[in-house]
Structures are given as C-alpha cells and as structure tokens.
Image (cartoon, rainbow, N blue to C red):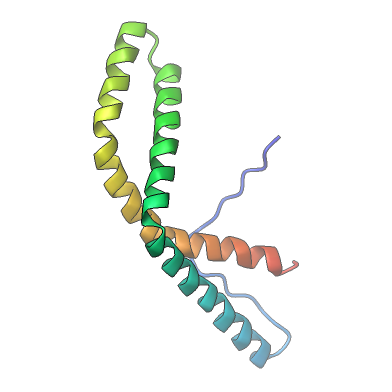
Length: 114
C-alpha cells in the first residue's frame, strides 16, 4: 500500500544543536530552494510535458469513474482535451510558485533524521 504524505508549502524550521549549525542548515536549505527554482525555470518544457501526461491520464480516469453513460463519457473526454491548454497555463503557474518549496521541505524532512 502506498503511503500518502501531506506536504505543505510552508518553510520548515528545525532545531539544530547550536545557533551556528541552525543558521548553516537554514542557509543550505535556502540554497536548495533557489537551485530548485532555477531548475524548474530551465526545464519548463519538460514540466509542461509532464503536466500534459498527468492530465491525460487523470482526466480519462476521472471521467470513467464519474460518468456512467458511454456517450456522455466520450463527450466529456473531448471537452477535457479542449481544456488542456488552459489547464497547462494554470498548472505551470502553480508549479513555478509552489513546487520549489514543496520539494525543499520534502528533501529537508528526509535529511533531518527525526
């Protein structure tokens, strides 16, 4: 069974052994966040392709689950295909705004050893 992990966009502040260690840790985690922001900016095309793939799979699964009649399902799937460009714009903005901090928090939680 997959473990579901809830990740927030709030920065993680941890308690280290000394103030200098704490400051060093926060600086390095901030560096990770900056590097991830840069990575996301450079890989815009790749991320948009990932969004497209996830949208294709997710929209079909959602329509199959929620729409009981096949004729309505076909119409809903065609509408979903037409709305993909709009979703891509909103998803890209969300990824740019939230993903660096979400990934940073997740990575930081993996190296805290708590």
